[in-house]
Length: 272
Ligand SMILES: Nc1ncnc2c1ncn2[C@@H]1O[C@H](COP(=O)(O)OP(=O)(O)O)[C@@H](O)[C@H]1O
Ligand SMILES: [Mg+2]
Image 1 (cartoon, rainbow, N blue to C red):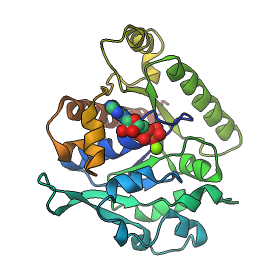
Image 2: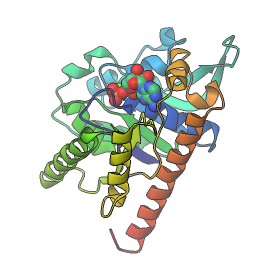
Image 3: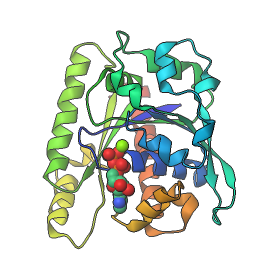
């Protein structure tokens, strides 16, 4: 299982939407089995994927922190997605550990509760995507300690540069304190891109420029109401309809897979 945290200190940049849509693509297009862990007390990934099914949810990530030995199946829910006619719910290959509001009250002395939990179930999934809160809490540190990889969604503006810098220095500090020293930052990807906006063009070029490429995903996600509409129906975009933004996520998910495999090969050969 490849565990990827989707993190940025800024809210509203597309962490949740990207988490759900990358999962949708890994499932529907690439045939993978994906676990999403919602670590954000706003529980947006949970309400996205459990929109029509919230009554089923009895346990959440909160229960893991209450009892780290909890049976995994108690807190893992298979997401059921509405069919195209919105008449019935269809089983997907996306699974979810739901969040609840109380998560932001968690104070944990152990930063490896989530990592140790994921270790128990790693044979069951190809990917685990962790939707992170936009703040640094014990929950966030647990999320960052559980991940092998980190991707940073950002809007195509100055904040993409400052946001990246903030995340990199946070991770450096974490590693200096001995936490998850092997965490690999895969880089920034731009979300809500509108090719007509000149300023965005500047930032797209900036990230493609010398020395920045390695900190950046070549593929970005366009700004479109399709994303908002799919979310409104509780459907990942690949379940909702054929669209250009669905293709953006296919490109991004393939690039994610490629970056991870290249990195793993490099590590196997003794590089870093
Ligand atoms: N590519 C996009 N096109 C249009 N709207 C988007 C796009 N990505 C995100 N949004 C909208 O922006 C808002 C914030 O996205 P969200 O994923 O919740 O951000 P975060 O998790 O970083 O706070 C949501 O209302 C979402 O529907
Ligand atoms: Mg979110």
